[in-house]
Length: 235
Image (cartoon, rainbow, N blue to C red; front, side, top):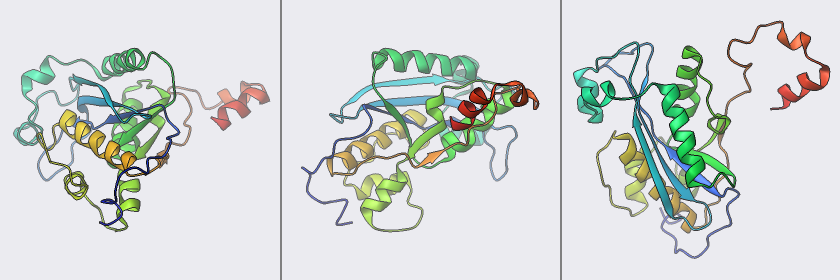
């Protein structure tokens, strides 16, 4: 606790111009797994890497295709109403809208890193749904900062700390609804800024192995010149 509560004033220069914090909510049932699980809330919060200022926020509700009717458990857990997803967009459109918002908010310039609380959002949820549905996603979602990692390094403890526990341990007030994607993204963003102010340098903690493009034929790499094949392997 002493490390995280240390006096401010030791802020380090970050390697990224912007951080985009995401926290997806998805279809779910009580005490069971649902397949395929689909994103139903796509929120993001943009943080300036130099100033720590929260610049902008984005949210779109996403209409699930395979389980269009939300369970009572899902509605009560997330606060998302059936009419929210009924009026939502498909995931591919949500990704496009998010990318357009991000480019406008950053003026299309500067480096950025995706920030999550845990690895589930990028490693599991978004990746699996995009591959299942054949949706191309922006490459910046292929690597991310799991904020739990730098938080626990600064805290000096172990165990699986929750976002709620981390926010309170950092001396921040818990505001908003738990499992509301946008509220959780905002709290993660506030925690990110707090860690930055306390001198924690943010680095990438997770990434995806470069998969072949969606629908790519297995023999395609054999048809590419060796220079192209090497470029693909190096991505």
